[in-house]
View 1 (spheres, rainbow, N blue to C red):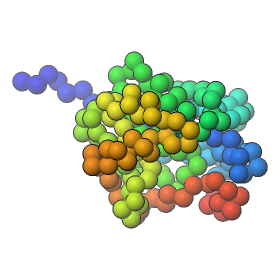
View 2: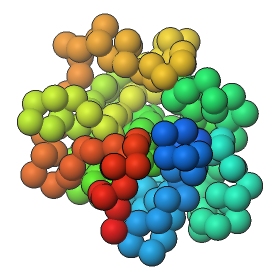
View 3: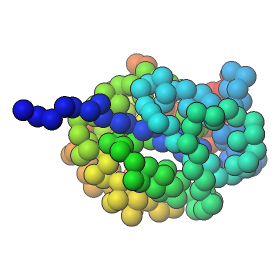
Length: 201
């Protein structure tokens, strides 16, 4: 008989450290969407999509974000090297899970307000084991959120440099990734430039 199955722990990891350089230096976490900071929408998407605990990686204007956004039920990880790019934030997020009984990390970016709980739940449901790699797909193209089983964290962190994040790792393991089509429930646009602000309400 197998020992009693515990429910797998899939943590949400929200990368929210960016300084919004092309947005005139406004931290992306604090951009307003439907009357609240963007970071709160992303936290809700992770939580309502079945992830827990939720770890939020802050960098630019971290104290301001903590003051203005309700992150009370989240674990906050600070990335002092946020200016190096997304790779350092991904490392900080995965490091914050070290030593916990977490089976997988589901990584979401703060600047994609078109991705909500439905897409998170779909990708989360692709979890099978600590060896799982899964990602949302939009018309067949890989996007976010991405789910990393715990077996992959050390190698992903080792390769997360500059703005690359896990891109090179995912490319090298393309055949192992479960793609989960989400284009019917989510939009994968980023808020990178002033023109992109039209995606906010």
